Image (cartoon, rainbow over all chains, first blue to last red; front, side, top):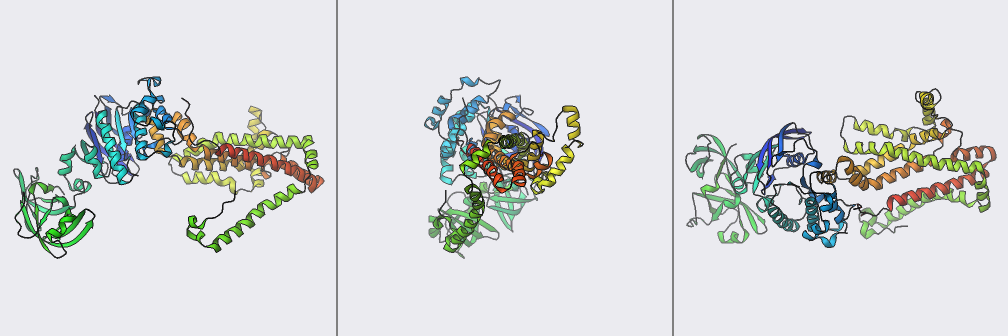
Length: 359
Length: 278
């Protein structure tokens, strides 16, 4: 089994740069790379694929150092936005190119059975079709079949869904997740769509300014940002300036705009430090005033409704509880709680959902 | 093929019948301006005068020379211009816009000026013409090589510009994917980039050919003899008058239009999905 190891990768490329990027991706894990535009996500992928000269650092797949190899000898399957099928070649010839292109050290081209590969990906009936007439799903299957024909040790996927509408995206995501799980190769998937993270990723890396600012198991990173920048990338709606009162043990106490909040453990941040707390809007529960709390009610706040913003099934609520707070709830619950602008409600937040992050 | 404007599809300003009418009027004047002189030129000929002109050996050799030199020029333009166009399309370097401007310079240089300038460089005492004869035995005055040099100077920008635009239209990510599939840089060019840019390259070569076969000013100064067809027509016009000259003119017109249409057909007739030849 092959794992991808990237160590101290640095390079400069016009406006883009990579700055000391290091991570290890176990074989059969998918790492989603999330970050804003210009964070260097695509540059990272292109560098691993071999398109940019590395200033410092090392890239290895399963102990095979590929840092100095040209792209055609790295054995990576590269899938780009819109899947990058060659429009002047039929589907079968696209796939055959993956097998023919190959490699002194791989299996000989003649042994790659194109027909069987097309069959396996369910596109045998499209063998002679032009890629331009395929549906997005068929394009994805053709692109994966073509990559498979070249026997990759690693998959690199650079926002393949970026140009698709939401329903197509959801379906292709499922298919891709199934393929990657069965294939058991390390894969890097670059995106700026949160939904891709949980559906596809085992690991999550957050990138900004050419650096990986946080990296780990998806759930861990998704729930516990370590910095404000990480909370930004993860889309935490509430990021409040505060002061850490005490951070020992399993919980922390922070003061935000004069109000004491119980928060999750601050993990090494010294007491008395200026910090931020990050809270997801969906973790703020709203109820009529004086309703007995359901579940964990480490923090009970009296709040005034400032504004309601219906977003279809969900409604975003802006509150004032001494500091601005954004909550998000099912739209059908809005009348039950009596949410109108100016109303008073009780907001409860579990301590585990309040994250202390460095500024 | 005359497309009937369909306002309900065109939208915008074509929604107004007055705009459509004005467009047709202007376009009609323009088309008449192009076609009327040419049709008039052809109309005064009889098959007899054309055949008689075509039988003259000097006319035959002038026409042959024009066709051969123009095709040769397009090939040389392709050989030097297409790789350079790829470089301009993909590379980023300081002074790129200046380089691109230099490529366009021949479009603005009057062709007689180009001819004189070329004569000074490629002539008997020129910095290229002299050594080329001394060391390679290659002469540029009074030879096919000289005609090609004159044609190339005025027509090279068409190939470089058309090929450059065509290469810029090829998504670099397709080239990247091809590399990861195991193709080296040269094979990516041959299998992916050039086939995808082929239509634009062929259009550029066709324009270079068309510009070359119609070139007079630069050629006549650098190489009067052997005469290309435009030079031959000019001389017949001076010596015998308009009727003698017009018969040869129509022959050149027919040949160059036929070849132009043929080359365009080759450029555009390629099937969009071709096999990679397993």
